[in-house]
Image (cartoon, rainbow, N blue to C red; front, top):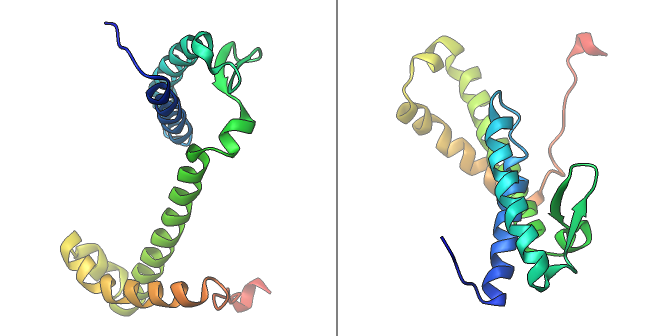
Length: 154
């Protein structure tokens, strides 16, 4: 198969595969390494070809890993880094509000009852609490969030 890209399209493709590889590299589950290797292989192929098409200023060859990669300097100021930073930020706040809401509901109804609920019922219980945490964190960030150590921990 032969594909033709404009210089701008190829630039976007480089960002897209770099973003996919960065996100894929975060997966630490068993078996992920083999799947990630496929990402790296395709990334390497595309970056090698892009190097010969005028993108050598943002692509380098990593001797230690014997593959092409986008330079760290380029990545840190690119849309790729912006997207990853935003993804991490969104995941942090979503996970924090969800986990706190689930914790609060479990404290209220008990773990056995929580475990007996289906996903829809769990959401009915957690959504209002998530919303209140979301409102609090939107207004104040984590400034009012405190960890209270249990008595036995000092």
